[in-house]
Image (cartoon, rainbow, N blue to C red; front, side, top):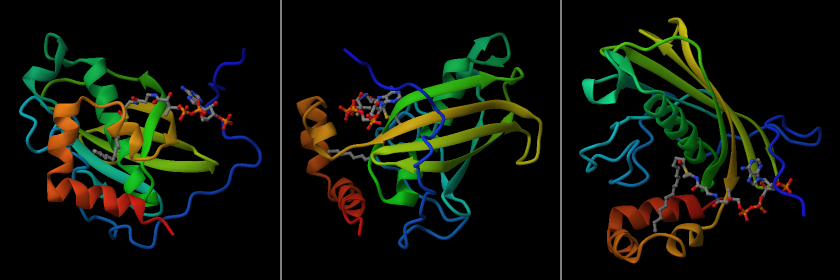
Length: 194
Ligand SMILES: CCCCCCCCCCCCCCCC(=O)SCCNC(=O)CCNC(=O)[C@H](O)C(C)(C)COP(=O)(O)OP(=O)(O)OC[C@H]1O[C@@H](n2cnc3c(N)ncnc32)[C@H](O)[C@@H]1OP(=O)(O)O
């Protein structure tokens, strides 16, 4: 039996990504997809609280300020926290395509250590689309958008229906999410994909 293709190189017949006509203008916040999300949720006390903004084309940006609670070694960020920030910024690209998509594969290179207090400037972009598969890359630079490269990632996201969440999530949270008009608006925004 054949498993999933794990290559992060788009196939030859992949197409260029198309920015959705309803995507926010470059610089505008994309908003959180879920209040309790570890990456972007405003109501998640343990979260990264990333405010992700639309970029040019099919790209997005965010700034992670590395805090004490993000440490993995004395004074240095934990790699898993940095990978989560990359994953979240990449995940927000779904807003630019108006497609609900989840991470299938995330490959991360940790290029240099990231001290507590660093402002890590993240930028993610979709590079290609092949059916349900969305190929994307991301980078995190220390101190500014042109600062030294600290982390980078290549990823494959897979487009899913809202049932991916309703059929797999815990009932309690699903019920609460579907009773929240703001959350329903988020889902509707994704469903309108002409
Ligand atoms: C009610 C509330 C609503 C809330 C509304 C919120 C909306 C906005 C949510 C946004 C959220 C973002 C948040 C941050 C990003 C995360 O962190 S997402 C969380 C982490 N990711 C996950 O939990 C995903 C878990 N994995 C899965 O569910 C399934 O494996 C997947 C990824 C959906 C794929 O399963 P599938 O749908 O059965 O697809 P499948 O047919 O196996 O594969 C389709 C294609 O993808 C390829 N593929 C699949 N997996 C892989 C892989 N790992 N590597 C390479 N290729 C792969 C296959 O080879 C296949 O390719 P082709 O044969 O078509 O060429």
